Length: 283
Image 1 (cartoon, one colour):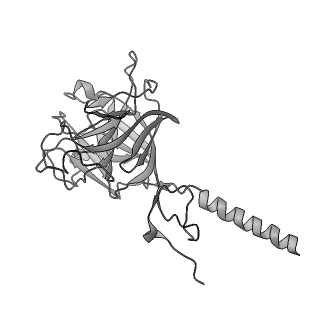
Image 2 (image 1 turned 180 degrees about the horizontal axis):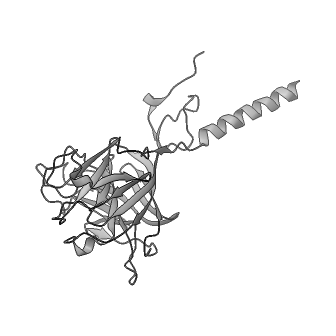
């Protein structure tokens, strides 16, 4: 009898351990519409989806310019309506078709995942990019090497190898992905300590201490943060930069939550403790 009880206890503990370690990835996109997302396109107020730039097609978020005559530097971002601090985000993306007339040369097969950013509502009407950390997504041109999951820093700086980096864009070590193939991108964001970029499962870039600083943002109505201020949390957004692009399988894993093993919602993979999230079984 004692042996049976001991075995049942071990099974119970094992089950609890499995539940605690199972990663609860959440879908950020319902596959039907843009519920939970807010567009902000340059020269338009927050919430206005100019010429249906962002749309849902076949369960994908699509950036399309078929209703545009010219681009006119109408850079856009689609903001998720919840901010995060410690998390992993992953998605699949691909570039399609042709770049719109008068799109910048550097924006050919160019998009991005913006993290630790300001909100859509806080951007100026004429502002081109949110103050944020950009995980730059690039597609190949069929000829030269062109890495993806690079780093760009609109209104920000980072630290790499103990040195403050003020260069606007830093290339990753990724491969080049030509054509319209799907590419998997993942970003690990740990508050103001470290950010890592992954392409198809391989880490291609890592840096620390994301912070306010630098230029490369036009049309701001007011300053966002102060120079040198570390970025601990912020918005997540997807870019529209003049080339059609598609996103699917957009998921997020929150790494902040209850770290008390006695709580029913404890997760062993949490990195940042938030005691107020803890829930306990009623006795």
